[in-house]
Image 1 (cartoon, helix red, strand yellow):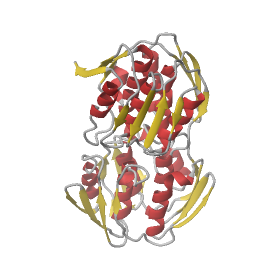
Image 2 (cartoon, rainbow, N blue to C red):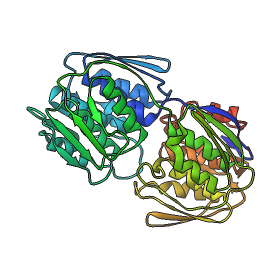
Image 3 (cartoon, rainbow, N blue to C red):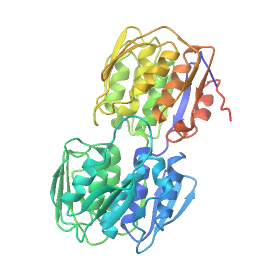
Image 4 (cartoon, helix red, strand yellow):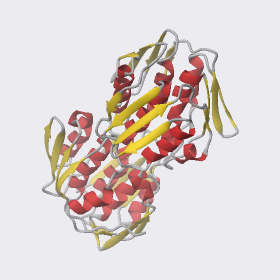
Length: 412
């Protein structure tokens, strides 16, 4: 239950990145022994990934924001159990299992209902390295007598495909070049951890990754980077509510475009090494938004951009170039009084001074967060249903909003 009329004011410290920690946990499969990951976010997907790794024979211990993963000499190669089907990131065990065991059976993953996210590029990358791969009985099946380096050009800079191919390539024979690789900070974080483990990877942060395979890797300790999506959500929330929010624990260079866009709506932005401040003194000015692979505007922030556009002065056009089903969120925004019209992969939003309270339903992590933030500028009390989605990506979401001055309660 969210009461409208609040202007966010205060400081938020973000934890480790959801889009990084789960892949780092999967990378522990690449070596025997205990891998330690620190600055882990308190989100539902971390224990879910722990369940996946335990199902593969690992011993996983969660200790606050630290995860210890002890991988056996021969982890199991079948990840076809229930935990795998609950979230998308579970597919990132595919590459490590093929690299380490030369075979893998991984159940097709679940996750947010935001559109088609096929595994074609994951499979074609593994095939280029010498593996066979096909879909059978609801699982991705892959096997190889040996993995040999190759030049692999991705048709789209897919984060998941880049990660799986990268983790398979680090234990392949010879050199692998991944062209049109994803450039996200989360990819750089994974590369940094792999290098600590003894992998030979260069080009992190660019569109070309070069991997020289090694025979074995060793365990390491690694700190997860700050979550840029969570950080940006709180910064954009300041603009939505005409508030003043300081965000700590994040490299603002990971959000250069997002912060530039907030300047475009009229916010005052201050940056330093590990944080930034957003002050929105007046109603936001409408601007256009378009999602693109990093360093473009993140698709994960598209629902938040629509929530901001809904109360901005003027008309905004939001273009979704990544996931075709993400606009189902717009229908829920219209329940709150948003003036929006969908045309293909565009939505035009004419801002209003204030939204109206209603019952709304979240369909994914970011849609849930966007609906709650929109409810902050609605009249009366709004009830957001299916908030378990939010818990998968935002630690202490309700508690942080309360600290920032919001009247909000979670109902059983």
